[in-house]
Image (cartoon, rainbow, N blue to C red; front, side, top):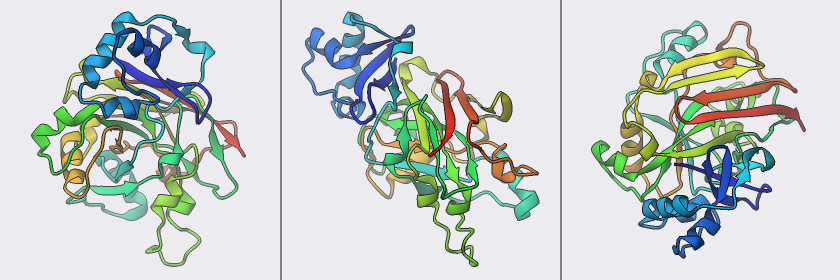
Length: 299
């Protein structure tokens, strides 16, 4: 099943995407006799029996809204946490070598944070502000938690995940790498990745539609030109390792999102560098999950 949100930004309603239409989840749950709060997907995922409630809602769904007539928001508009696995594909490390020299894979996941206010919908504009001249893209598999998890084993991760989503980990590289400083120690990953609209994503595809452990193809196009073309088998630390590792340090809650890492082809390591500009259209796709497509627009 595909979970979405729809409606004006900041006032989205949870929905189910079905055959090109959006079903209002609250209305469907009411019709199915499941009186649970569903103002957004996070509240749904916090219910112990959310999967069965969702299935009942899908069976009785009516009042369909054509997809082309609504704005789609992110599947989980305001999760408690949005986290990133940095430097987590072999191809990404390899493309960095001409600039950085030989790069050994990390011994443990390099986990970064990103403000949840950066999250936006799969068709929303990416806002290019005056603070950056080096706007970059990274298609990444997003893992959405479906159960509270603390210190879980890799083998148990599957039972704590609600599903996956296509995400774009947008970055202002000059801010992220603190290129205004003479000392590279003063990097500010969090701010450089947390501008509003720097995390387009959606929809949330639940695990019943996916084969757990199957490698998925990832692809980014900018104005129709292929920039990234990889697979999740390129991940250094896979979904099970990442979620288990992070849960050793903090509790993961339903709706929390982990972006797992991006393949080679980012603008920063191209020669010459080719950062996003006003008017560019960025299309990210993950096999079985769908497409997000966003226009870059100057503020």
